[in-house]
Image (cartoon, rainbow, N blue to C red):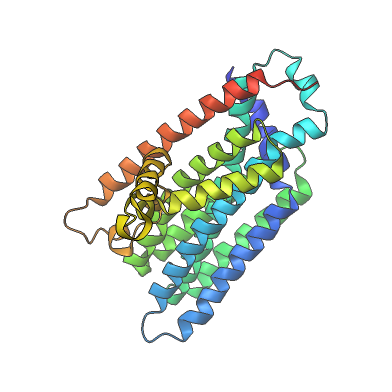
Length: 310
C-alpha cells in the first residue's frame, strides 16, 4: 500500500510543481515580500514588524489559494486525460488513489510554504542587522543549486528541488535569529498555515471527487471564507439578524472547521497572552487539522469509490 500511495503522491507532486499557476503564485508571493520591504521603509522604527506581519499574512492567503487550485484540478486532470483508467486497472484501490493525491498536493504546498516563509525570514535577517554577505551567499547558493538540479539532474530533479527548498527555509530561519520575536511570528504562522492547507486540500478533494474543477474551486472557496468567518457566524446578534439566522450561523460554525484559528492575533503567535499557551494552542490546532482532514478524506474515498467513470 505504501509504495502504491507513494507512487501516486510523487506523480501528483511532479505534475503540480511543473504547473504554471504554481510558478506564478510563487512569483506573486515573493513580490509581496518585496512590497513589504518597501512599506517597512516608510514605518518609524517598526520595519521588522511590518515585514513579519505582511509576510505571514500573505503566506497564509497564498497557500490557501494554491491549495484550492491544486486540489480542484488534481483529480479532474486524471479523469479528463483518461489516465485514471489504466491506473485503476492495476492493483490500486480507489482510496489509495485519493490518499496519494492528497499527500502529493500537500507536499507541493509544503514546498511553497518553505520558499515563501524562507524569503520572509531572509528579508527579516537583512533588516535586523544580519551580515548581508552571509544571507546573500545562502540565497545565491540556493539559486545555483536549483539551476544545477534542473540542468544536470533528470530523474531526481524534483526531489532535489524539495530538498533545496527545505534547506533554504532552515538556513533562513537560523539566520533570522536576529529578528527575535518577529521570526517566531513567521515560523509559528508557517506551521499553522501548513495545518490549514491540509484542511483546505481535503475540502477541495472532497468536492473534486464528484464535481468539476470550477464548481470544486467555488465550493472550496466558500468553505474557506465561511471557515475564516466561523467566530463571526457563531456570534451573530439575534436582534439584527433574527433568531433563525443566528441559530443557523451557530450551527454552521459548529460543523465547519474554524479556519480562523489558523490566523490568530499577533499576541497569540508571540505567546504574550498569559491565559493562552502557544505550545498548547498549536498542538490543539494541529489536532483539529488532523481530525478534519481524516474525516474529509474518508468521505472523499467513499464518494470516489462509488463514482462511475463510464
